[in-house]
Length: 101
Image (cartoon, rainbow, N blue to C red; front, side, top):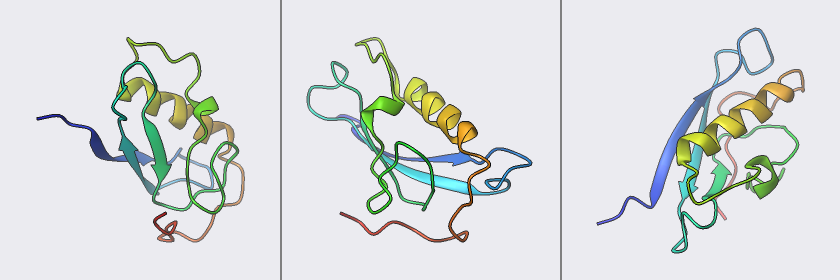
């Protein structure tokens, strides 16, 4: 048994356009994980650099310097930090979701 597919929630940054929002992400570990980073896609709509505006797919550039010793928690910390950098950007209405690909 392997745990290769995850649903993760990240709380938006306080006192920003993301405040009090719960962002849901889908994380899938490919067969060659941990040699490569997990594939991440926002389910909740978000407006931020590094996230495809149509699909919610997270660019691997948001999980920099991945190494075999990386963890899903490390990847989520990188993504949350990127969210902080985009926290003043106008966001879609709460509750909107990207359509599954």
